[in-house]
Image (cartoon, rainbow, N blue to C red; front, side, top):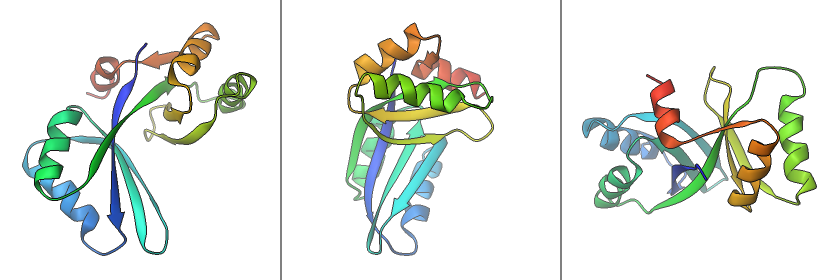
Length: 142
């Protein structure tokens, strides 16, 4: 099964937090391939994909951030009406919950965090969807 490692950081919702994370990684030469930030009034969760998640985690923890790593599925989805619905239908039929999803800009690759990664991977691949490994994801971005 091919998954991609995602970093998640729980942040206080205040100016400078995103800058601190991005500058810490940038100064160390770690490229951020994509990220998403969801917030509430006081806190937010920043999720990101980087090439070396363990090194990035160590850098961010050294800088004082709390970092978790989770497996997500990087699914290549053709830019056609109804294709996202097909993925949702496959997961729904298997009673796999989509916890969240976000995308690479202009790449037709969507990152899915689901309740049952192995089952989702198997069902998506058996239904003709391309689920990328980390190596494939990062090589197609260069």
